[in-house]
Image (cartoon, helix red, strand yellow):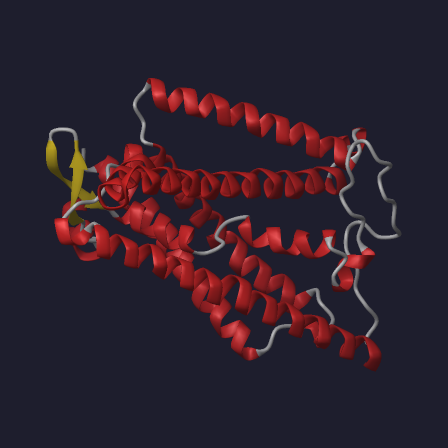
Length: 300
């Protein structure tokens, strides 16, 4: 019975050529990888919250009313509100909110959507121009190293080292953003929502979480190397988990925006439509992932 049900809702696996030490082998673009790639292409998971904390730390708009995360070497900045602020519904406040929201829309459109789309298409074009003509996809266990070796064939040693430097910079900035953003979010959550969170100052929680994340990261690198787990597989798994976060986060943030914000700050119908579509997509993806895994176990 399970085979019949799975056949109706099955996501086809697409074969791709993968370069390995013993030649070209077959690999599959599974639904889990596809779902992870969709999430990873945008600011999925908790990455959506990073921007809100960026606005707060830069004192942009209503972020100026929130306490900034200070260095442990400095005295923590104390402000009147540290869990949120709702402005009174006045004509002046409505105008100021619209001005602030217009800035956010322009900033996100140019720095995230347009610039992100442009750089993503650059990577796609590079893969098509260099790899597609020879029918190769680098091994996921050594993606950056293999790409650098391929570039060395056309640009020599200089091109190889340039690509490695760029790859290291890109990966480092990604990790730095993840560690810093995640530590800021969870230190704030602990400090403002739990009694034990008041045991430490906000900046002290940040240091603890950054240190813990770094230890886990070092252990993960050792674990992957010891048990021959490709780092790209870990990225797909992390992106897949971020997809589950989005399945909860998107409808929750829409509900909070429609019920808890002042009327002049609530989203319009265009934003609501896109948030509903995003909610449906992430919930469907997450539900299909759970269903397929349960069906797979049941059919064994």
